[in-house]
Image (cartoon, rainbow, N blue to C red; front, side, top):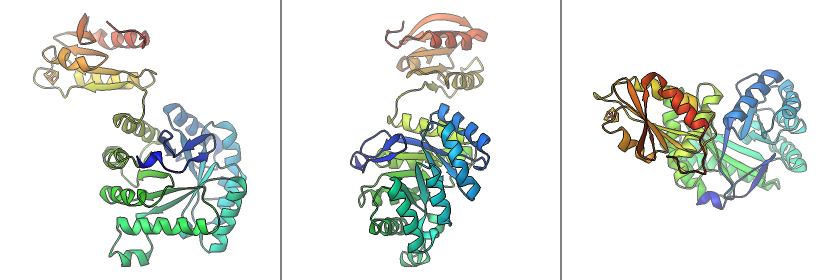
Length: 356
Ligand code: SF4
C-alpha cells in the first residue's frame, strides 16, 4: 500500500501518512471573519466525524479570526490561501495548524520563501495544491491539453520549489473535476513521491452527482492504497460531505464504526411503506455509536434470508413486521411499532453478546 510508506506529517493534534488512519476533511462555508458562525459549524462537523477542518482566508480579518476559532474547536485547523503571501504568514501567526497554498499563484520565489520561512520556524505543514482549472499554460501546451501527466508535473514542480527552500513538511493535492483524470493523476504521482496525498474530486457537483463522482473517484484511488486524507466536495452543506466521506471509507473497509443500513429495493411483494421506513431508520441510526449492520427488508418471502447477513433486521408483512436477529425471526410487531421496536433494540444492544 502506498499509504503505508508515505511520510508521516503532524497536523495539530493529528498525524497523517505512514499508514495512519485516513482522515476526513471538510471546509467551512461560513465567512471565516464571523467567528461564532464558523465555530458553530466546525463543532457540528466534529460531532459528525470530521477530523480536519479547512477555512478560507481571503482577508487579513479572516487570518486574525483563526486565533479565536482555534481556541473553541478541537480538530486541526487548515488555512486556505490564494494569491496573498501575507495572509499565509498571518494565518500561521494566528494558529493555523497547516496552510494550503498554490505556490503558482503566490507569486515570486521571495514571497514563497517568506511563507516557507515562517512555516519552517513553526514547523507547520504546507499542502501544495494544484487544480486542473488552473494548470499552467506551458503544461497545457506540452501535454496538448489538461492531462493527468500535466497535473502531476505541475504539482511536483511546486514541491521542488519548496524543497529547494529547505522544507519538506509537505502534503500534496491534485484536484480535477474529471474523475478518471484525477484517478490517473493519483496513480502517477503515488509512484513518484512519498509525501502524503490529500484526495478529492473537485467541483464534483450537487449532493446527487457530487456523491456519485466522489464515491467512484475516491473509491478507485483509495482502493489502490493511495490517499492519506480525503474530502468529498459537494455543492451542499459541509455536514453532508462528512457523512459521505465516512460512508465511503466504511464501504471500502477503511474505517470502522457507525450503523450500516442495508435495505431491499422493494418490488411487487412489498406490503409496507418500506421506502419511508428505510429512510427513517437511516436517520434514526446516524447518532447511534454501534458498529453493526441493520437490514430493512420489504417482505417475509426473502426478508429473513436476506437479513441473515445483518446483525438485526426487520421485514415487512401485511400490517405487521418481523424482527429478525442472527437470521432468525424473534418477534412479530405491528407495522406502526416497527421503528420504535428497532430503536429500543439498538439502544439496549450489547456488542459483547451474541444477540438472539
Ligand atoms: Fe421484494 Fe421482498 Fe426482496 Fe424486498 S425483500 S425486494 S419486497 S422480495
